[in-house]
Image (cartoon, rainbow, N blue to C red; front, side, top):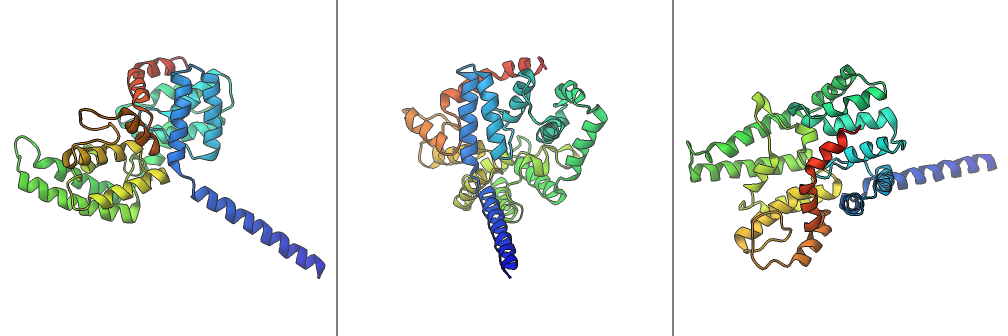
Length: 303
């Protein structure tokens, strides 16, 4: 009897621990992640301390599933620095994650610069291509189809040849409805869900479509959903900041994040406070990242 009770208590304890662990994982706020990435990136760019940066990235990626933002490229940076410093970054398992995070850009030939590194860990070009193909096959075909149509619709009546304000406003209304349906059913349509190239080689820029929604009656809904997607890690903070800034610059002659438009007499301290609140680097840091884009290429070539 005592044995049975002890067994039941043990099982109940283990279930409770699992539930708590599961809840904690689900409730991770990626704004905190993005803030930490900015902090670590500053250690690398401003303090020039790559050894500290790589260790901090290692800690961060144990807690959060890594992202690889277009400008900071945090996971790529981590792998490169770890390899150069002979720090264990997780070997082949982590390199497969790198392939996945860079796969969307493979349509432009990007990612091949890492082939020598993959080879060092026993992955030839065929295995890398297989991993990329696996990602391609996982894309949401329904989303690719609908967003290809949305992209064509978004651009058609804005072109010089077919410009028609009434028709592009009608197109925007249709795209707004589509985005609402997409957000509710699939979450944010990131490049990992839809890729960069749609059907017939059409470039899909959800970012561009979103910018044309700032005057939509659905603006508040879309804004709130984007914020939710930042917290869940589905949407980069910059998509939200540009979306809000464009709306604010049109309707209130102000900007909140410094990512769209030029407004005189901007309070830079407030701008940086707002940027940090959604996980963006400071304005000064953002400018530094822009200036360093060529230095990143040099860093990769040292592998």
